[in-house]
Image (cartoon, rainbow, N blue to C red; front, side, top):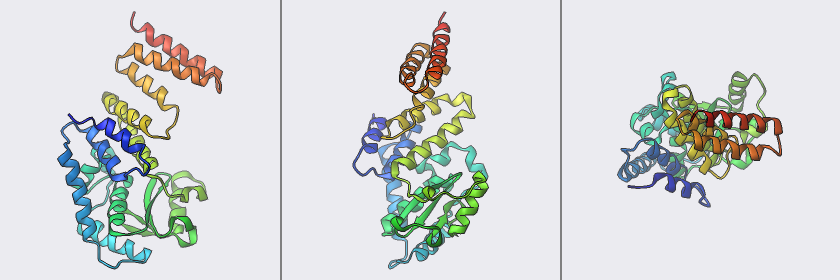
Length: 277
């Protein structure tokens, strides 16, 4: 039996992590029925779609138009509000099969197809909505942005559209830092955050939350608090001793920065151990 988690950890720490493979490995961990043949088929589908992009596409706006026509109109990749309620919307192999998904997974499809076809493409993790950009990511400013929203079937976006999107999501102005292209591991962490959010709203699916946290912790950069979240999940699932031990380990780390928070965590660890009595 393939150890998908080990393969995920190895890919996440590669010198140049492969975004498609990382997302497909998330799906393999999520669905025990997934085989290597399924992952190969997904990669082949991305290659097939890239082969359908018109040859000779060069300008950034031409890439948006070509991919909107191919992926949005002909192939039917887009999203609807109901997709937020489905775990499959965060799994790349299912998104390729269903042609539906969350903005970030549809953006992964766009990025991987465009990259294979020769485009200069990148992902932008704007607050509340992920989009794709075309052109030189080192020369990104609001006046020259060439973006597309795969969730809307590939609707072209300008810098002004991005400003409106951010204002609608946060009530604040777009910060220049939001225009930095997202790295493959940052994209995967955001995918896993979405999965954790889906599971948090469904306490009966704490198994999903746990593996999503486990994969997040395998990424080179992740929030330290995930270790405490993992400990809480273990306690929630009845593994009181392991959960309490991980809480205490996290409290030791917190001693140097937030002593009062560390003591609160130790109290919760003691409460978890008491559940055994």
